[in-house]
Length: 462
Image (spheres, rainbow, N blue to C red):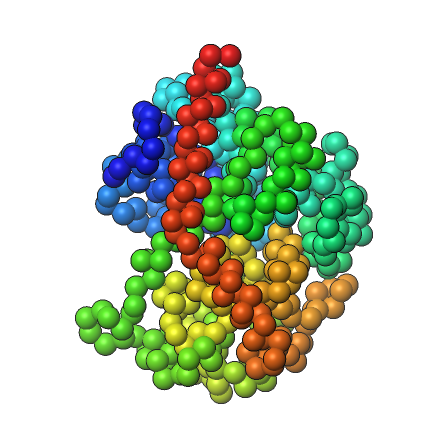
């Protein structure tokens, strides 16, 4: 473990929202900081900590996991500690339980006095607690700058949108054209995030308060892709009053995607099947750790995969596990090594819910996207990637979001067979130069660490 740059080691406490799409990027940041010799306290709940990936031995001594235990909350199942344990309508009770952690959180800060606190969108009470103790606070957005700009621009001060139609229009008065906005069916779901829930406060107000009260706003992103949106966020959302900085894309290290056939013993049935396919002929299909298809959506997706007549590998995450052969593809239940699959030469595209982590992994390996967004920021990401011409969306009904098997097949054929797919692939290969550039993203972490040092010093002597 070697320090990059000069100065004493820092102690940084990180506190992500209780969803694995949030915890894993915070964990990646933690490992990057520990690799540089900094001490990290990772705050979460016992069950979430137990389910996180194992920490590499070279950085494990510098990452301490600090468990906070929930008090009982009505309507929250007793074993539920993350959004993965809940139906969407139950997540409001998880936020109420999170708010109940203010006392143990405050005791932790008083006892340890970290140099910095890095928080997520949900802990709107954390900046004030930290400020009272003289601890600077950074907000880390796992949403990119365009998505977060849209979500906050729709709030005029503290006035939240009340009608879904308000969320179907791109931000106004931009120096460039954009289609970044929600479809009507997406807006009908997202509008609830701007309404107070069982916790007594809306997600919109949580987010707005954290951006306002934090000393620094950090994004999972980079200037090579987000410079204009980052500038707009700093001047228009933050009023130019605080640093707004990218951390790089926090990509998983490429060395984690080992070549499966190099292992001792026989490769798995999945990789044997992949090795029988032509180069770049397979569509990999997966929807992240928490996104869930409804029964009718799953049925139409299956129909579309068959209709496309394109080889596919569909990772369903069904707990039964096992491998099922279909007319032109493979359905795999349970956990799959996604990075290893994306690295395989037979894979040519990724059919995804368009979560940011999945997109980062796909672009690392030069794969265009077939996009089927399902929740929160994913529709905004899909619009942005279509603007960048690195993927295509599955056509859907504007009112209810329904789609047919033929809609799925048409999108797959556009990427994998038709002439347009060649242009998409060419654009992604240019994007790959940024997304797979580990040295570039490491340099962003170095710059971030130096900024933490500088601002800590400034705050100490104010």
